[in-house]
Length: 482
Image (cartoon, rainbow, N blue to C red; front, side, top):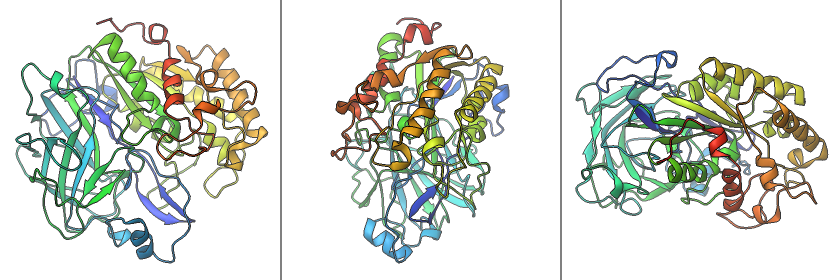
């Protein structure tokens, strides 16, 4: 069984003062790691050896999520990159003859892994070569003698991915001790690859909340180097890399955290691995050992029912709606056992913007939740409904109004009282200050940049409280204590 970390995919443009992107995901595949044909999600079973470990969240850009933060419009694309120090001088050109070193933290470890790369939102073929996977030492440097060459299609060291497609690597044997892999718990893997020529628009995950590295353009291939001196640029996004999968036992349970930026980890600690799915993962591993993996399928700015139609040529912050990306990002997860679904606040808060739909009623959101649950139950997947946390009095007026809060509470009443969910996680009760109707004051300051926070996204302490609100025994009754 193969479990992999889910990276979210995005294409990006500069419009209306936003870095606009969309997030889509890939289909988990097949039983034989050397096969070049893949089964569809509907044909996956618990006997498939590959599992997607989605606790690995892949932003200078980020996977599966989009960076919806506002910024002043630059006078030119070049000014944007000079001001922000990005390594991509021409936005439309993407990466040019440069090497990426992306850091990822597996939720499960195995001696045998494979990688997935995607050009889902690209407009031109992307060619990668000199792909390596290693263990991070610190910064961009690697643990000596852990470098492993990654090949594709039974031994090829170069791969071209056409627009709209993805590709898996061959199976890779990591440099680990026997038995695997207690010495690696808590470590990060470094995935290095060289972009041949120019990539064009890149598929990426904006808010990785993890520091990765890359070279300047036209610096050539440096993936084999252990010292990291060539990687002068840093980023908090993931590019092209969309999944790490590990070979895992067939009884491994895979739990997906599905939602928006609150699931993606906005307001958590950079490199701190303290999003609520991270904290939940630690609880689950403490209780059930290596029989479980948590996949983070959060996407910043995501809405349940809007936008009505998304395409790479017409992107919007938050990417395709939850219902639109459902098949790719949720049902496409191999070995999926359960989904915790926390979403809806953006359907209310983004209304009236150029990206939001007209007024979303509580009934519209409830209908969307019912449709998603129906599709999951058709696959015999457990669904844990999570109540929306408060955004009342947020610094963003569109989210902070009493009208938005009333609609949020109406949906929460449905979640608490409905029988369609297999279990309920009351994140609202865990984070709410009853005296103010807003987040509790200790959950407001941003864990990375400090300050007052936006009163939408909890901090490290708030995310931990959310994770602690999940009743493990009630929500995951089939898991076996270690």
